[in-house]
Structure formats: structure tokens, C-alpha cells
Length: 511
Ligand code: NAD
Image (tube, rainbow, N blue to C red; front, side, top):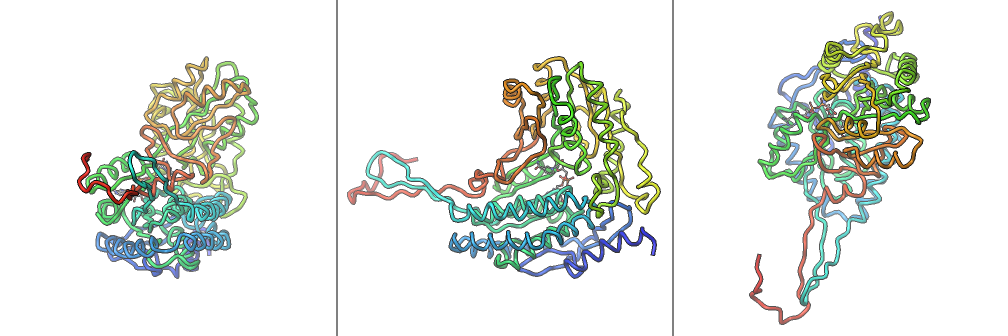
């Protein structure tokens, strides 16, 4: 058996072990295979075709909603303390299956095993965190004039649809399921058509741990069939969408047309700002991790590196040297640091955007040829892009404002704080960013001035489900993590009770 065959086999075997080889919607605890268009899946690391599955089409998506409507009624009526206990069990079960989930994600989408292991552990943490909120969804008592006892309750929306992208399917599934479930909703997860497997397995594990039928369903399939149906079905109470700006806008408009509110978590073009007084060794480690972890396929990737004049050459040399040392290789090898580009289409996008940046005047400071570990092995046909540092990405370079979503960072110099802030704010995105400086006052000034939903000081990419996460501007709106997510996934009801029996039958003030 040659290596090329064995990679596809590994992926197929992982799917066989996890799902009995069946990729389909997960509804009421069962896998339902579709009968629509075939969606082919490829092995990112080798370029081989792996398996295909059938799109469930509009009818399949409607069936999932039907089950979730039943699940939502049941879950909302479940005692919150019991919901909390079940979600604790889900957290525990995911923890017990963490290595299996990590191996499955790595084998089927090409995410490095080291990243997939971290993500699997974090999903268990997400359910653990939100299990703590499930029995603490509280209203308020509101003072009003007159003789009234007025109070509020937080009411779940019913069915919440979460649509996720291909770069972190398992992680975004956990992130976008745990909070709405804790708030008392049923969830339909629609993973990217390119990466459905780990999400189905995750829902299966959650069901096995005690989530009742219909409470956590998965609708695999295409955006134009399943995605459109789920985001416009009037039985759906809320949609959270994680993906590109273009699709997010489409989803926001379509859902609004059906009266469905949305949370949109979209793309970014985040600035990583390095001042001359920074600890350059730490800052260069941070800059490398910011863009090259997950091979840059990360919404918060630090894809713009702004470096103060004076340290520019020294700093970029450090980043280039550290980038060159990153280990590319088989994603399932735990020592691999940079994996392949997950989808074939994105592989083309990344390569063409590098060429465009160079056309517009940028200079490549890192090697373009792939290392021998790739070219001389069974991985030679895979979707590989070498970590790429481009210098001279000035404001008129098309890379300045275009999200690459790959291991490509564009660098440029600035002279002072005002310039750095203006540059950081020079795109329509507003997802994340960071500043590296030893000057604490400057750190706070810059953190306050940069328009972004998440900002780090002398750090990059730390996120945790306990903290709010989301975008400003084109990067979206709404926060699906932190305590505020409970508010996002519930509606407020105000209840008025007269405390005097002689309350006026026809109030003089009406609305
Ligand atoms: P995408 O927008 O192409 O697809 C996202 C999801 O939308 C997929 O599940 C797809 O099937 C579905 N979809 C497509 N058309 C649809 C439609 N008309 N109606 C409903 N659903 C539809 O995004 P992608 O290429 O999968 O992911 C990459 C993007 O995701 C990047 O821009 C990245 O920055 C962004 N992202 C954002 C976050 C965040 O939290 N802000 C996290 C991860 C990724």
C-alpha cells in the first residue's frame, strides 16, 4: 500500500469508526442520509478524494426543523437544574471522547492534531461553562409607578440555527451550541458542506450523554439548499452565522425577511502593532503564532503586521526566521505545526492573493518552495502553502484590506502611535488586533482606539468561552460567548401584576 492511499484510508476509517461510515443529518439521535446532489470530500494533506455524501436538500432540512421544534418544546419545559445536569454530563462525555474527536477532525479536514486536541478540550470546557449558566437564567423586578409588581423573564427563542465555517468545524459547533442550549433552546447546527463529520459526531456524543431527541440536531449539506431553508423557516427563532462577510450579509437579509434575528460572526483583517520598545523576541513569537497557527485559517489571524520604523528590518528578520522553522507535515503527526489549506477552492484563493500582493509591490521575505518533508513525501499532492511574510504591503496594496484566510501576513512600517492606530482602523473589518509595547499607558490608549471586538496587549489569539467574542463593522454583530450570550439567546418578557384589586379596567395610558 502506498502512502497516498493510506491517507484517504485513514480518513475513511475514522469516519467508519465514528459514524459507521454514514455522513448525514443527525436527527432525533439517528443519522439520516440525503438523496440530493453528491458533495465530494477530499483529503487536504494529499489532495486525494476521500468520500462523498448526499445533500439532504430542502425537504431534508425541513425534517430537521420539525424534529427541533419538538425538541425545543421539550427542552424549554425541562427543569433548568436538570438541563444544567445534562449539560455537565455532555461536557464530561466530550472530555472522555476528546482524543477521538481530535483524531477525527485531524484525519478528515487536515487540521493539525496538536490544534485539534486543544480544540476538543475547549469544547468540553464550553459545555462545562454554560452548564453553570443553565440554572441561572434570571429576570429582574422592575420598579414602575403605581400599584404594580412588574418583573421580567428570559424566554428561549425555541429553535436556534447555527451555521458554521470549514476552518474550525468542531470548535465553532461547541462554541455556538453550548450557550443556546443552556438558555433553553434547541439547536440545529449546520456545518460547512466541506467539513461535516466532527459536528455529527459531537451531536451524537451529546445525545448519548443525555440530551433528549431533537434538542441538538445537525443538518449537513449545502448553503444554497439546507442553509437557505434553515435561515428562512419561520419556525426558527434565531440564527447565528459564522462565515464570510458576503454570505453573512446574504443570510442576514434573508433571515430578516422571515422575521428572524441574527448574530453574525464574520471575517477579519486584524492588525498586530509592534512598537520599538516591545520585547521583540516575545512579539515575534506572537506575530508568528498570530498568523501561522492553523495555517492562517483563523478569523482572528494577525494578517497585518505594523512595525515601528527603526526596528522594522530586525523584527521582520526574526519573524521570517521563526516562520521558516515551523514544521509542516502530516496533520496527524503531533509534532506538525502547520497543516494544509482545508478546501481546494481556498487553496487557489490563497495562492492567487499572494501573487496579487506581489503584483501590487509587496516583497516576499520567506521562501516560497515547500520543504522536502512535503515535496518528497506522500503529501506532495496536498494543498500546501508555505508560511509567507510579505513586506511593503502599503495601504494601496490589495492585500491591505482583503482577508486571505491562509498563512500570509503583510507587513509595513509606521512612525508613530497615531499612524499605527489609523492604519489599524483602515479597513471595514473590526474583529481583533494586538499591540506589543512595554509602555503601559500607550498599550491602553491603543487598545481603546482600535476598532475591534477583541484586542490583546502583548499577546495574541487568546480566546475563552467565558469572555465576549464578536466583531465591529463588517466583522459582524452580536456576542455568542461570555455571560452576554445568555441574553443573546433569550427574549425578555415583562409581566405586570396589579397589587391593588381596584386597578383601572381601562388604563388611560395605552401604547
Ligand atoms: P462561507 O460564508 O462560505 O460559509 C459559511 C457557512 O455558510 C457554510 O456552512 C455554508 O454552507 C453556509 N452558507 C453558504 N451559503 C449560504 C446561504 N445562502 N444561506 C445560509 N448558509 C449558507 O464561509 P467559509 O468559507 O466556510 O468560512 C470562512 C470565513 O469564515 C472567513 O471569512 C472567516 O473569517 C470566517 N470566520 C469567522 C469567524 C468568527 O467568529 N468571526 C470564525 C471562523 C471563521
